[in-house]
Every structure is written in structure tokens, then in C-alpha cells.
Length: 482
Ligand code: F0G
Image (cartoon, rainbow, N blue to C red; front, side, top):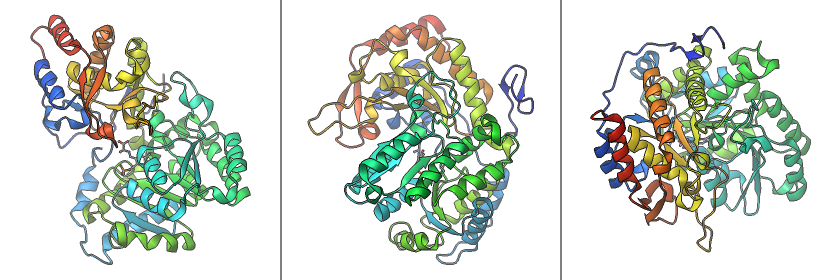
């Protein structure tokens, strides 16, 4: 049995909050779900939310907010310059992260845009534990090269490595040797490495990365968007940190970085973002970009109401009762699926539960987008909306050839404190049903394929009439039920 404080029985997570505001959900009959996904070109990004039962597309901007956050939003101080709300947020960030300077931005990718413009020049490399889509796009746009130096275990679907998001220090040293210090823009470490399944890095690993940065005089940039989950995993999985408080771990992580940035759509459970640093020189270098791209220095494109909510949300992130919720629900879902033999990424990470579509649909070739096909099939089977993270999310090379992704994942994000355990159990049941009927699921082919960001806007058709067969089997097994 795991931690008795937050579990009861045998690994059943316990909600450490009560629900006081609710939103009605619709569960359409299977035939209508099929129609809706067809109208969306089998692309879950193009579904209407009213047609979705459980929205597991992302945890970005859709985490449940607390009563205290909502209350704080009522006292926001709206002014273009010198807003009291900004001062409050700046103070909270200084208190929690110990960073003197805070540069607000409208969301995480805005920070990436600015950092890339400031630091990346053509031919410069940016070593990182793993890329995120928007991070990579901004670095590449400025002529930079993304170098991923995850540990070998990082891409293993089935693993019991507690920190699959760690950076490989030997590979970092080799890259510095290859490019030379002058052609490395910065080293980037991402908390809860998103695209490999929300996998954390350890405090020990970040200390080791820092030592290398110190040795070569390289800046360390820390993407703290998924910090909450990573903090929880450090506390639970890293022996030397078990006696540390969440606040102490946070402070040490922040101290190790030269620049920290985050998406407050994830960290702080609101909407916004920003860049923190202790260096006046860095602050002054970045500062001029904020009014140009984001807004004046005391709001940076954020609504003051959101800034109030972020200040409270960051404080709440220091509470283990709060940050345990995402990882524990994800662990429950992952473990239940694994028990039923469904291929999932292990150990359970943060952000969401990740299905291994390459194994789930081993009969679907990668050029027919197994993760995309699984996303469409799961929506038909359940009304659950996930996000394809595989070949469909890549871009073709210059000759128009497919770039096959390392992993074909269907990400089922777990917005924090949003779903009840029975809803999660429902999703598990339907996924198991789909797994039992996986042979009915076929691939997809493009009907409309945009050249860039095709996963957002592209439309696809099934390669055969497999969806009709899936709906027929659903009716056979579930009768008149939804
Ligand atoms: N870094 C990481 C690790 C992220 O997961 C995200 C966003 C960003 C940066 C960009 O932040 O969305 O505020 O501009 N991830 C979202 C997701 C989009 O669905 O995983 P943003």
C-alpha cells in the first residue's frame, strides 16, 4: 500500500478537496460521436467541446481553480502600469523561487519566443532533456539546433526508472565538445518532460547539469511549466529529498537555474506565464522584448484577474495535498490499464496517462498514424478526447517524406482536480473494451494536409470502413446504452 495520507484501500487516490462549482457534461450516443469525429476530420483538435464527455486533450488552462483563486480574482487591480496585482505576483514569485526579477508574458511559448530571440543565433545548439513542440519551433525559427540528450531509459515505454526525464551528463559534455562553448545558446531542462509522458528529472540530475554549466560558463534555462508534478515525484521518489519540504525543493531547483520560465496555464492553475531570474544583466537584456511582444512590464499580456489567480495558485502548489492529485489519478489510471494488459507508458508520470499506440495498434503502420487512429477510435468508443503525440505531430521533411516519430502515444491528459474517480474508471473501462476490439481499428490518411502544424488543422479519413464496424460492435456489446 502506498502513502496512507492520500490513498485509501489498495492504491485508490483520495480527493483532498470538495467540488463546489460544477459544469454539465454531455455524453452523445455512439452514432453521434462517430458523426462528430467525422466532421472533425478525425482530428480531436477539431472537435467541439460540447460533443466531448471527458476532455483529456490537455491540462493547459483547464485545471480546476480553487475558491481562494476565484476570490482573489475579485480584487484585481486593473491598470496599464504599476498594477498592485502585478506587485503581489512579483512578491509571491520572489518569496517562493527566490528570484529578484519577474518578466510577465501571456503564456509559456511567449517566453520561449523571447528567450530564443535573445539567445539563439543561426547554427547555435540548445541541448535539452527533451523538446516541447513550441520550444523547438522558436529555437528553429531563430536558426538554432535542438539537441535532445535524454537518458537511454527515457524512450523506453515500459520502465521502472523513477526519473526518465533526466538529462544524460555524458551526452551534454560530448555536445559541448562538438559545438564548442561559443555555439551553445543555453542548456534547457524541462520539468515533467511533456512529450515522453510527463516524466520527471531528479534534483541530483539538475545539480549535475548545473556543475557542467558552471564549468563551461553556460546559462541554464529551466522550463518549470510542469514543476508541480516534478516536485511531487522528487519528494516521493528521490531518497535524499524525502525529508525536504516542497518549498525547500522548489527553492533549490530555482536556485540552480539562471533563468526559469513557465506556462501558468499549467503551473499555478490559471492562464499566463513569465520569466524569472536573479541576474540584473539577464533581466535588462530580456526586458525590452516584453512591451514589444507581450504588453507593458506590469502585465505582459495577462489579465490582472489571471495574475491574482496565479499568485494564489503558486502558493497552493507548495501544498503536497494539492500537487499529489494529478500524479495519483494518473497512477491509478495507468495501473488499472496495465493490470488489464493495455500498453501504457510506465512508470506513471505527470500530466496524463499515455497509451502506447504502436503496441496497442501494432497492425497499423506508422504512416497510417496509429496514435491518431487510436484518438479517433477512443472518442467514438467513449466520448473521451485525447491528443495524438506521434508521427502526425511531426512535419514532413523537405522532400515530402514522413518523419516517423520515436514514440506513438495517445496522451490522455488529467486536468488537475477536474475529474472524479468514477469518470476515470469509465475511461479505463472503455479503453479496455477498445483494446479487446483493437483489431477492428484501422489507420487514417490525410484528406487535407497543411504544411505546418498539420496536427492542429489537418483533416483525415479512415483508410477503410473500420469505424462503421467499430460502431456496430459497440452496439452489439453495449445494447442501447451510450
Ligand atoms: N513548455 C512545456 C513543457 C509545455 O508543456 C508547454 C505547453 C509550453 C512550454 C508552452 O506553454 O501553452 O502556455 O504556451 N503545453 C501544452 C500542452 C500546450 O498541451 O501540453 P503555453
